[in-house]
Image (cartoon, rainbow, N blue to C red; front, side):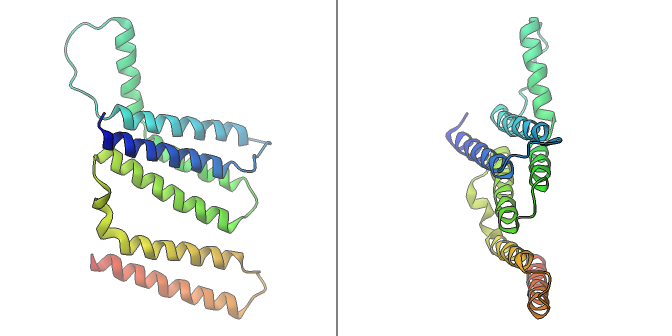
Length: 183
């Protein structure tokens, strides 16, 4: 394993752990909460294992003892399942079990996007500089997250302030669409 792969896989692992911990706080002790937390932890661990395993080496047509054959089949199964997507789904379900917390959910969304970027960089063996052309879109996306969190924190009774936030969100969405079409 190269140093760059170790760094990006380590970053993905830290971001996965942070997302699971962030979405599980405070713990949801009733219902399916503990089972979903266990699934999220398993997806986080197996997504990092998948990154470390990398792509499958060419299969040699030689006899393997049963232990090596089982290890190869397990590694193949880990490579086939999209663990990163499973982590995103389980973390979002964990977050949905809590009462509405706009700023908490907004930060979780930013962390999940960072995790997915780290997984992509580790899988593609690319450097962080690959994302440089997307920096304006990422900045506008962060602005939209901040705007959405601010709008969600407004009381329901605010009439003109809520309308102003909706108008700002529409203008920001048009700006993001324009930037996306420009690329």
